[in-house]
Length: 231
Image (tube, rainbow, N blue to C red; front, side, top):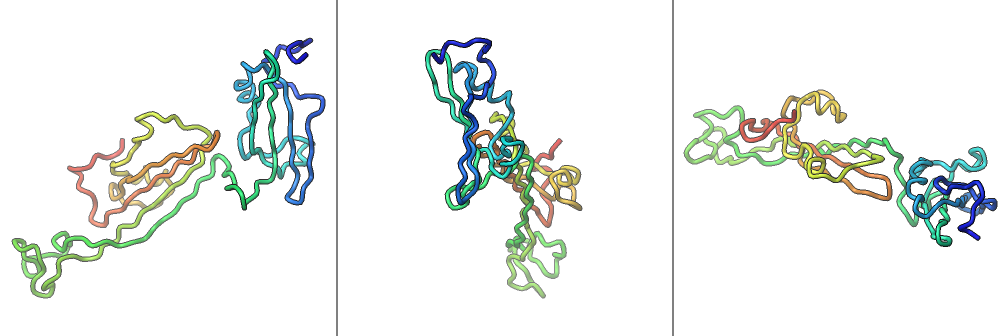
């Protein structure tokens, strides 16, 4: 019976005699591993084994390493026992998004320009700008705004863990970034406190977390008396 064991405490995964099962298809090799464990110990035993979604299959001394871990199932098998199933296969790009390995960092930039009130132009003077009417005069006659570069820099990282706490969710959003902080994020030559973190998003897919951060540049700088800098 499944709840009667000899020399098996049931606290760790023990592979069944008919495991692994190999299925070769046109898309590649599918590997199914079957393990016995106490139902109450299944989660901790899976954690102890250490494999996570997207890892290469260890079966067959690496012969099936192109197959990646797609799912882990826990099925109760009697009063005490559970069967844990690991399914490894080559992800089908037509049916699911490929899993990004933990540690992957993707950098991006969106170059753009926005309209800024002409009164904020560094070359304004009494001969080209009417302070009372907030409009250009002289050589700037009628001009109310000018284009200023305001690109966005983004950083996306795949993590193995993330704690959804208020502190972590808020992060540095709304704060000015130092040159050193932006260098650590992957942007070189950043002017001190000319970048502000505007967004932070974290999504979870199984045991994988995707963290995306957006940083906004201000060509005229940000008002230091309005915005706090990062520590």
